[in-house]
Image (cartoon, rainbow, N blue to C red; front, side, top):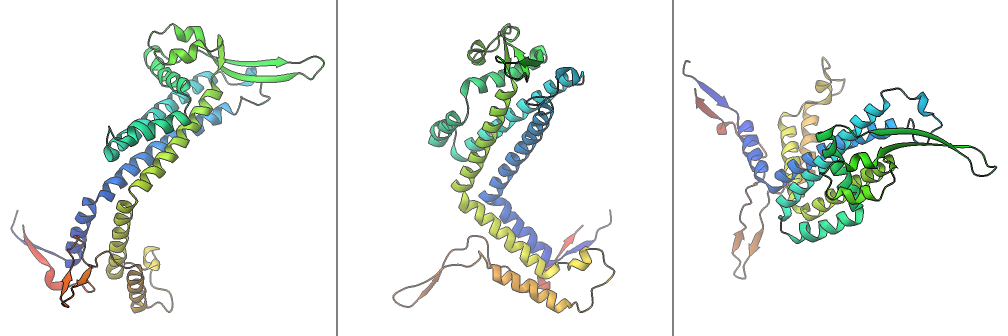
Length: 315
């Protein structure tokens, strides 16, 4: 390859330096963990909606079991497996995030978090559902009983009751239950599973909301620092290279009355109105001398782009 030079603009140099600073902040690492939590709850919510949507076509309806498609049990088992897998994944992500930010042996993880888990979840049900997923992995989906029963009390009207059930004795043949066995042994030979799933899904969602807000509260200053600096950099970039709406929309030209000078002035005003985290603290001694505080690594962004800051790179 022939040797040559590439000129790098001072704008790109400034942006790169600022982004390196942003990436070094605690708030940037928190943002990654929040993204992981958000992805996990998104997957769980989608699986939950799918399962509850399918079950709602039968449970608590007047639909008779004979009216259901033959694939209903298999589809229910598939969606149940997806829900349990995504719930377990979310809990593992939450545990990992908690260990990373509070410490595995911290009071938060050992006490506060454990107390909240006990208050939100029904322990036997959670252990059973965790193991139900493992059961499916080892032995295949458990046998489902899709049932419609017609009942009447005395001379009262006939009432229809639909239920989605599991077989206790069939499940107990598996030797891998451990904690989940306590729940199973308390159930009838055929027991309703959909209500257990509904309670579990709500508990997982409630715990996620608590954990998310707790993380936000505990590390709010780091989150705010990253967000404020990132927004400051965005507004600065918009002032110098921001594109007007008509250009982003793909219009052939500006609307009547549009002014580039006014557009730039509005962006400048927005940046100055937002403020900066680049100010240092000045202190004045009794003798009248002024001391400038230490830099945090985030100086005020330049008011103008100095072309002389551009550099040439050899290739």
